[in-house]
Structure formats: structure tokens, C-alpha cells
Image (tube, rainbow, N blue to C red; front, side):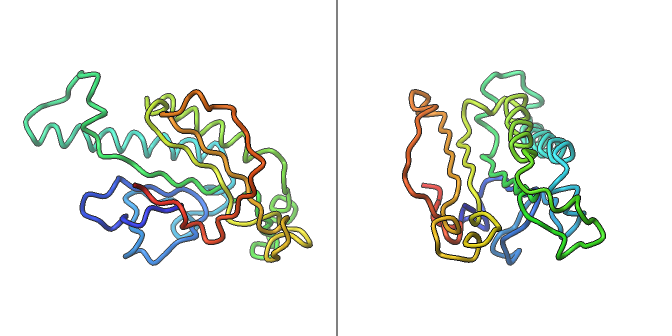
Length: 199
């Protein structure tokens, strides 16, 4: 799902929160990064309140950088309703970790890490979307929700059975509001997460 031109000089502002599945940093540089590389994965990947606050911080930082660019150009802080158009596009990758079991990698946390499917990811997505709305980006942001693999159960993850390769895929486009709520039974598998690119 990551856009390849993250290292292009006119690339979007890029942020990542949560489980980091990409590298190296020279290929996928992030301006804003809170992952298991610099924070506890329990905080940046499982604590939905912390994730919400980090999303808010990303949007605040993004808007502040745009205001600083306007100030440097001598335009000052504008109350222009179209000031968003002057902002660099952004790419924010939020990777929830609570669908992963972690007792094998962090046994000290025991049962806390073994809560699969407890609904926190859904609540977390709702909190992220509310931050998007509050920041004023709801009507001009392409939202994609997916997963990197199927369920972590027998015949699931790491297997080529449908339960291992079928993944959730939700897409919300601000340009096709008439299709909001449409569903499809299409079989989705990204197998590598790099089949979606900006055009």
C-alpha cells in the first residue's frame, strides 16, 4: 500500500504509526514515525487512545509545516478557506497491531497480547477517522483499509487457503460518494501490499 515515490523530491508528507512492515528507510523515508523502532508497540500499535493522539499530532504537524511555508514565502498565516490546497499532499500509514498475537515475542505481557478480534481495531479506526474529520481532510482523502495477511489461526496466515490470503479491503473515495456503502464479494489479496500506487 505504500507509494513507491516516497523518496521523490516532491513526495507527499509521509507518516507511519504502529507496526512497521517496510524498509529500508532510504527507500521508504517517513517524516513522522512512531513504530516499534522508536516506541513500545503496545503504545503505538495497540493503545488506540495513543494512536488517536499520534494521528492528531501528525495532522497538526502537517498544517504547521504548511503555515511555515506560507510564512517563509511572505504570505503569513492565511484565513483563506483554500489554504489546504497549498499543503503538500500526505500519506499516513496506521498499522494496528492488536490483531496480532504477541505472547511469543513479548511473553511478559501474557494474556494482554492474546486478545484477537476484541473489537479494538474497529474502535481505533473510528478514532482515526474522527481525527481526519476534525482536521478537515474528510472530503479530500482517499482512505484504504486492508491487512497484510489472513487470520493467525490454523489454515490461516502463512497458508494459501482462502482464510490465509483473503484480506479485508475497504476503500472510501471522496470522488465517488455515490458508491459509499456499496459492497462486493470480490476476492482480495494484496500479497505484498505493494499493488496500489498513486497515479
